[in-house]
Length: 202
Length: 279
Image (spheres, rainbow over the protein chains, first blue to last red):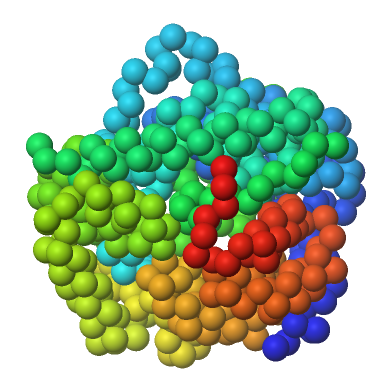
């Protein structure tokens, strides 16, 4: 409709300090505060998807941003920023899970922690539905090891290209392909198992 | 080069879809987080205007009105199949699961299989739930928008939000100050997604059209265009989807979404919507 007006002016949004959510900043030099304010949600969400328990999110996010702060130079101008950020989250989630106490012995963590969030734009029922759907996916992701999980999250959920994902994680693109494929299969199996459990009588 | 990755199968795709736009499941205090980070990295100079306010970038969830709405339901519902079912009673829980999964099909189908004879009863419950929601949505007076960027200490009185944004709401949103622009944008897109999740594509498209009119170059313009393309593909209008995708790629050649959109469209072209791609 007004698509033509919506042209390249999107760059002006960046001028006001907004690094576009999925785009890239105009210059190579990243400003830490900008990165934090624009992408802290993405980082936190990624950690959550990588299996960091909700009560630990803030701690692990702190680790991510501290690490990131020392590596701003490592960001290559012109590359999409999210996969680059994701790699930090991936490493932090790996460290987190290596600590024995954080191994996933409490598989039903979702059961006690997920609650609908409402911003007033949708009915409580909507929020409940969304929370339930998220809960299903996040619980199913628990069935995957971190590598497969990361591939699914970065490529399938975030929509990163396999090439960008491979570069960010420092692995061959063929490995990304196979991790995504295997990850999907495992994910589906987990969902089916959960749905069977859910539908069954008790 | 090995062969490119197939698009995800429809059932997973639907779940991804909901997750992609989800806000974090818990509210992390950004100001506190930033303060902690800065404490570790040594203050990083006072140049940081990053007080509590600048902590809220796009999608910070600053629009969240606390857990007020449906918090009761939330606590009970909180997820894991067993606790949810126990708290709600099997039928209600399954009804909710089914309707939430209706777009994906997989959950519905699987639950169908597992349910057997109870299926019809559950279907009725689902329909009842949907009817009630629709009625609520239609009858609800135009609710004043939750103050978008207000500190969300007190649980807002949980408006029964209609799934579309009424003109009155829009005006109210417009009158509010600048910082709420993002919230207004997000609200429209949330409305579009909520409508879509209920299979009301027309409502979704109208919310998208309104976003396009009001925020042609908004901070969430790219998200909007992607959502629009996804709806077009889902409803089989592949040609339109391709046109929009070309436009999106022209405007944002580096968008992370381009690859995904290309896969999505390629998948739609290869197979009609009804068959799921082979794994």
